Length: 260
Ligand code: MF3
Ligand code: CO
Image 1 (cartoon, rainbow, N blue to C red):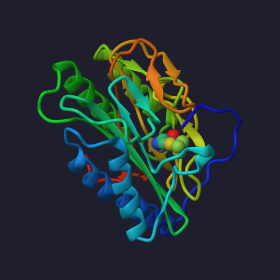
Image 2: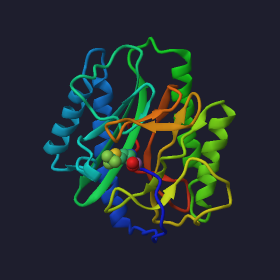
Image 3: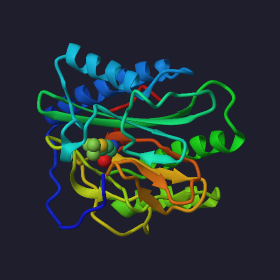
Image 4: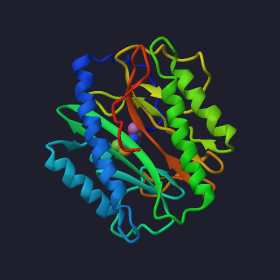
């Protein structure tokens, strides 16, 4: 989500609501697995979007992104220097070696699912692209490993930032993760940068989407003329991974588990 302002209260979820969120997020995970299989040389990003749209319909859910602030598609598909919010298009054909990020959200029974992954098409990817993807995914899991009741939100942010920067990559600041529930975006914001020991105290029943966006160069971004597609300002590659998780007294419960 775009970084915004204004404190609103964090909504804690009851166990039955966590199960609704798990169902929505498991649907996202299953569809993302299928979209991953479709990532072949020559497919258009609009074709991938249509697969997602059909699956969501077949399963009696609704797309979460379509119509959100006027967003025109079911998925966000961002290629190479595109970071997030790439709009699927019949003109955009995927080719071998492309670094593709796919982000999907659904609404099932009033509850939201949201998750994303990046992958290289075929096996001809550059070493840089491969490393960027593995660092971004590892950063997400390092963040998740800090997500536990009684710790602070900044512990997650700091773990992500420290790891990414230690690997020589940049953390995007203009977009952040978010609380999620009966809306796609709820408080709190979940930045991928910050200091441990700061921010809200994590509590059992909080549900958040953690989504590091990592660049191979400068972390500065630019939004294209379509009003959505965020690209790296310097044209460097970018990757994005996202899981929706529930906070517990023990290790985090990854509601969207199963597609990475
Ligand atoms: N995972 C992204 C987010 O939380 C996807 C949003 S796409 C939008 O911001 F179209 F809904 F904005
Ligand atoms: Co999100």
